[in-house]
Image 1: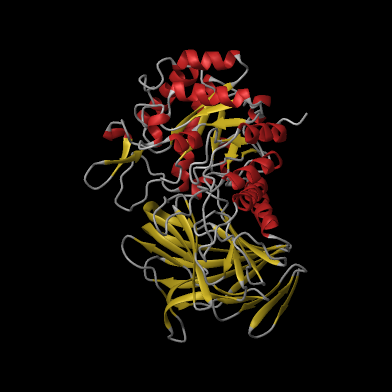
Image 2 (image 1 turned 90 degrees about the vertical axis):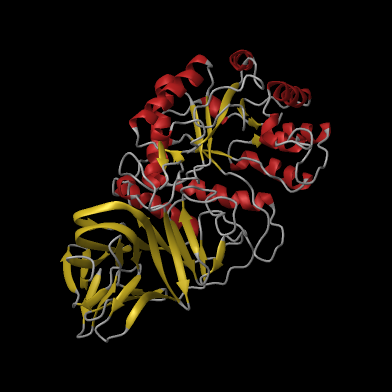
Length: 570
């Protein structure tokens, strides 16, 4: 890496990028991509963090690494320094503060300041790209959106407006920028690309969301800590790492490799992969929805219904290796005891399926406080339960007891874990421990995963969490529910959406199996097109038996035999 110096700036040429770092102002020009604002704010419960003086940058060279420090005087901290670390391939930005406080929002690549020029307010990095790739499915469907559109990488969401962006929760924390205008809901322009990823391990993932916030040609990144991360003495933020890439998929691979190289993610899954995990899956949720005529689909998670659906599938050559009993086989979501009115002999039913060479997974709604005592829950300002609290030893003991009951006594074979996007969010919420955000979700899944494996080592744990640091708490990544339309209101083919999701999961967690899911399908034609593609995208999963719920189209025996021929070719 070659560095030349002028009175105004340092000029870096690494062969992978060209960077001009100001010697006087908190800024750097990443040629062709961004004018980086090296202002940052670490707001606290006590008030805003505003920079009121910036000092000249300081360069330290350490072999082939150049480190630029930008000291800044802060209204909230005893000292604050934004650090720019340059290696031959990467440029990383982070902020370090000293003092005491409880973090609210933290912004990088911009923040609140009164500059030495006396300009004041919020400052942002200039963005010279045309499009930004998001690794998290959102509605409306837009894989590469205009660079002026916001992106949220989060573990908080649902189907409400502005919140349907946590289908992956968490996704890999990486954005990618391109020079071409996006064209089509799932189209990905050619290169070059610039990846921007978050370097942080589980211990530092105590925020609920990273938001890309653009405005009028500028943008910053906002990390939402929600008042749950306490600083005593000193704290350094996660780094935002820039690296050139040929595609957004390579940017995701770079993100994973960076975390692994820094000891912040494992190379692959925690344990052995068992052969039965790769066999085709039948999940009853689509069939429940299609059969729900005037009743809630959850009322149709019944032993007799599942027997009927599986018998029809077998009649037409479909014998799934794994069966998922979906919502709601249990009386309560929190304590997971069998609803015997719907499943009068679940243990015997599972034993019968085992005798046929099949395995049985149970659907688990993560975070649910339904049926739990308040003392085992995250609570609101009124003391009411909001979510299960995995930082509470009593709840962790309950999970172990549940695993012994379901995997031991009932002899089930694992779980499809859903609703991780219902992670608790709110500065006033109270937990037993101090963990929050993505880290609290990891604690929940780690508790479940470890407890399950102690009871049944080959138990299969399926999640929708394709963040590399979650590699050790999941065996299979599911692609999750299909969305509907693009920004113009036009339908987006299910197979195109799920190819994109598959590419995200495969590059973020290449050692994991992928559950291809299959719900909801807009039409019989979409269902057949996706069923044909599923074997090349991961473990095939069948959700429908008699009809498509959204279109009410009948599924014929010939349709089922066609699926069987695709999934079990002669």
